Structure formats: structure tokens, C-alpha cells
Length: 417
Image (cartoon, helix red, strand yellow):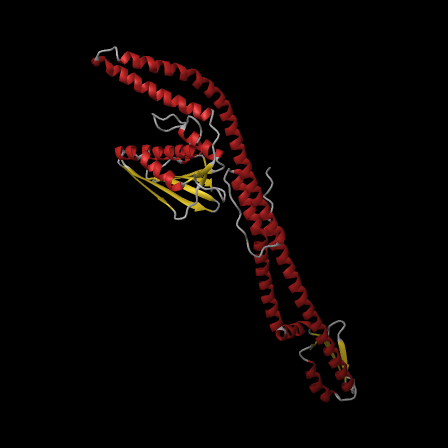
């Protein structure tokens, strides 16, 4: 048999505080009414003693008007047990009992404002109990919601609540700190896994590329020798073979470049020259694909501290990818601006965007969405940027994709050569 669900903390606080408020109200009102009753009863007995003393010296006909003054606290009860007796001088007796109901009615009527005030106080206390229970349990509910979201794999940060107890605020901050640490740890694990995969892949790729590159060079040399010995009508086949050998050699060269990257030779790199060179080198692919290329550099943008040829390779790969993403025409926008102690380079295209489930894999080696792609371009870009101590981010929607490369500026005193 399943046990019933336990009461929540909020419900328990409401019940406890409401019970305390009701008990205090009942105690206060009950004490006031009881004290008033005993005071009225004492006054009634004093009035009876006064009437009894006066009646003992008066005849019966003079006592009747005097006894009317005993009402409403006393009522005549000739046969009641324990009744109080009043005797006249000529021996006639009257028996009275205390009219408690009349005293209570008179007392309640007299204290009606106190009762109303007590009822209002009780209602206010109940409302305060509800508010206090809500204010105390709301941070706990938010914390429980955050834990549930974390359990579901969604990263969340708890909002900062105003006018909350210090302990709950500290708990809130501890949860947010835990989320930040977990994010950093997850990112570190991803980077460590990436480095481990790349290290193993790099060793294999370097060995394979080295073994393939020498035969390719020999094949290309002998292909050029054959070109002079064959008739013109048969040279088309050699052109196809030559083009495929060149493409294969380019792939192997990229593989070697990725597996055994050259350490960057740092120096100041002018941002305007970098973007101008990129626009010049990609003008022909942009014209053939009907892509409009534009670029702009923020006024006073400082030079980048990096390896010029490698940074050119980064920008060239990013722009060519942007052009390939728009086979039916579009636009590519290059921008450079200062970002604190860094320079931010942006490559924005108007292509269809990258699906969200693929964004985390685009920098993995050999991952590509193009049939003719090698999957090494963005991996090389990522490695070069990391080698420069920078960061590359990507944002993609259904209407555009933006690659942002953040690189450190040249140290003070370093002039461009």
C-alpha cells in the first residue's frame, strides 16, 4: 500500500502559524471575556448584598421596587437549589440565582469592538502566515526547479531574489557557483577528449600523409612527362588525372598541416591589411558564386599579435566556407573591432545556417557537410586560433552564420615591420 504524500514545508508553515495565530487570538479574547465576566459577577454579588442589607429593615411592599434593581444580573427562582435569599423586615423571602447568560450577553455586546478587532487581527495573522510561508519556500521551490532542470541536462542559473534571508541567498549563490563549475568542468572534459582524439589521429594522419605524399609527387612528375608523348586527343584524360592528383595532394597537405602544425611566429599583424588581403584573394570565388563581399575595420583598431600567414589561412578558410554555403548567391561581411585587450574578427554570411545539432561538431577533424569537403579546414582554423591564445565562436540561425575570432592585440611598444 502506497503511503500518502507528505505535507510540503509551505503547508506545514501555514498550518503552524495559523494555529498559533488562532490560539493567541482565542487566548487574548477568552482572557478578556473571562475577566469581564468575573468583574460583572462580582458587581452583581455586591449589588445583591446591598439589596439584602437594605431589605432586612424594610417591609415587603417597600422591598419590591428595590429588588427590580437586581435585574438583569439576577433572576428570581423560588425553587432553585443554592439560590440567594433576600428577607424583608416582616419575614417575607425572595430567592434569586445569578443569570450567567444575561451577563455573558451583556458582556459580549459591550466588548463587541474587541471581538471584531480580534477577528480582524486573526485574519491579518493568517494572511501574514501565508505570505511568510510563501516567502520562505519560494527560494526552495526555485532551487528544486533548478535541480530538476540540471537533472534533465539543461543548464540554468537561479535568479537573484530580493529581501530573502541570508541563508537562502547563500544557498542560491552556491547553486549558481556549482553550475558554473560544472560548465567549466564539462568544457574541460570536452577539450581533454578533443586533445586525446586529435593526438591519436594526428600520429596516424602524419604517418599516412607522409607515406602518400611522396608517391603523389612521383606520379605527378611522370604524368607531366607523359603529357609530351601523347597525342592531343588523348591529353584530356591526363588533365583529369592531373586535377585529381592535385586535389589529392591538397588534401594530404592539409592533413600534414593539421597533424604537424608549424609553431606560430608572433609579430604585429595589421588588421586592415589582413582583411584587404582576404578580400582580394577571395574576390574570384565570390564573383563566380554571385556573392557580395564587403569588409570594414573599426577606426583605431590595434594590430593583432600573431603569425601573419597563419591568420591569413584562418580568414581565407572562413570566407571560402561562407561562400560555399551560398551556392545560389548571397553576401559575406568581414568586420574587425577592438574588444577590450583583444581584437574581434567577424565573418558573417547570409546562408541557410548550420543545424543546432551539428554546431558542436563543426571543429572536429574530418567532419564536413559538403560532398567535396575534407573536414579539415575548420579543424585547422580552430588549432591556429588556440595556438594564438584566442577563441573562436559560432552562432547560426536559419538566416545567417557568424564566426567570431577573438585574438590578443600586440603588446605596447611592438611596431609593425
